[in-house]
Amino acid sequence: MTRQRRRLIGSMLVGALTVWATPAPAAWQPTKPIEFVIPAGTGGGADQMARLIAGIAEKHKLTPRPIIAVNKSGGAGAEGFLHVQGKKGDAHTIVITLSNLFTTPLHTGIPFSWKDMTPVARIALDEFILWVNAETPYKTAREYLAAVKAKNGTMKMGGTGSAQEDQIITIMLEQAQGVKFTYVPFKGGGEVCVNLVGKHVDSTVNNPIECVSHWKAGRVRPLAVFDAARIPVPEWKDIPTVKEALGTDITYLMLRGVFGPPDMPKEALAWYQDLLKKVADTPEFKDYMQQGALKPAWLVGDDFKKWLEQEEQVHRDLMTKGGLLKK
Image 1 (spheres, rainbow, N blue to C red):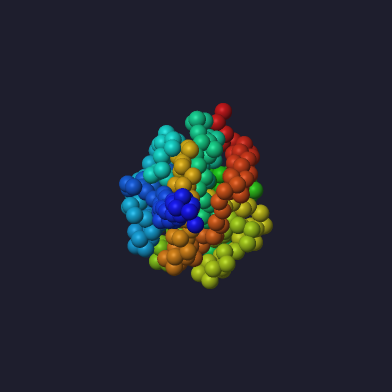
Image 2: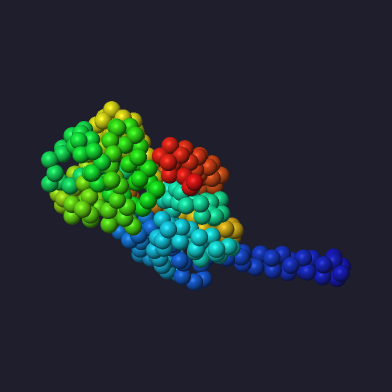
């Protein structure tokens, strides 16, 4: 073998070893605290889930930087959504989403759409239950609705926000049963249930997780669930559906998901999806889902976007029927 050929082979080997020894680029990770925006008040379902996610991520060391939950509930969540919308390209801000993602812009006309953000993942779908104070005589939804009808619009239904999910369900119930409520809006679901316990309202349509502690303490009573089937969890399975209780087929499930700002880097998007999936697979999160009767509903990518498009139209139709669209 000639000297020149030996040199050529040696150079090729050195080059190959250099390529082999060069470490692959590290996957994206956050380099500063993550702002987790909650477009709702404290104590409600969104607030509880966001803070649980942050706590589980810290406990299991799933993120190198802390997740800081921040409530921005002004304008029925518009404050939070517009805050995130304004952080184009930011990789250190996420927002937990509920169905005010659709209802708030449809009702207020604010220049915002879910398409203005980056869909990360749908984590779960949340139930709604018709609740009354446990000290009232109403043992069934039919008994309670008969009393509402007799009081001719003076019975108070508490809910989170105006023209949001709770009021949509209230209007659906009114239209189906020929009754009338006085709807009383509050900033968050936790506050709603507290006011039911305090007898400041006659009923609510809270999410299960928002009233479960008061239910276990014997302060409130569930009358019916707004779903096509009963909740398949031992603690909740005895609550009839609205169709079973009233003969009226009213179903409504609420989004529990996470979005990022517009143009979130793809590497960051993938990291958050991986983080949320790991959180969802922990025993703590699974227990929370069961205790709060939430439906696991993991969805990402194009399938999530397709679902969002369908849900936006569903809410447009419901709000049109209920007279809640921006004039």
